[in-house]
Length: 225
Image 1: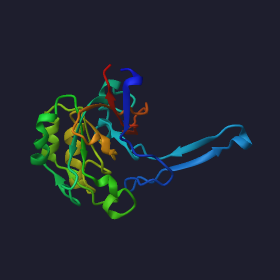
Image 2: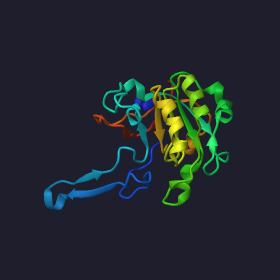
Image 3: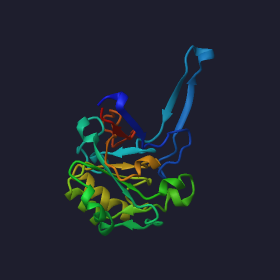
Image 4: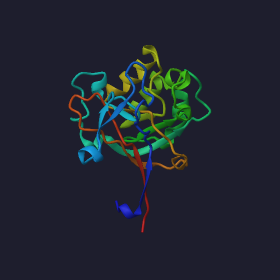
């Protein structure tokens, strides 16, 4: 891959002090600890949950010893991304089911990253819409994606499952038990909503026992010549 012939698309959200975070996990705290004028350099302290902003859930999130952020091989964190455009079709606290996901069967292949754009990211903030009422995928849809052999499933909401345990658990258990990674709070710039499959990467921090890690989710356009 020639860097001079590659365009990068940022599919991650910024982490900043007080950024919206999953309820009960606490918002990020970013504190400047050193100042160049006083200390000769600038530095800051970061304090936030590993499940903050754009992040990858590891199998360890639900299953002890199943694979954490430090132990999974790097090959697990990149592949071709298939974007499912569900903007305008996913309502508050509604499930995205098998019938909807299977409409995209022809573009979903083994080893793919399936990235679901519900349009919910446009509501990012501290209101109930974004913090509690997001759409999610149900168990049958998760089972279909698992059986397709995908590497990861991502969505632009705070969780691939709904706000309640009853809706959140099925998709997490079905995917993570099969080693399928989950990416949450994906950002979708308009230029990646053109139906093209692109190479994507979501490399985590090397966190020992990390059940998740914030990631810089990136899509790549590689140009010939």
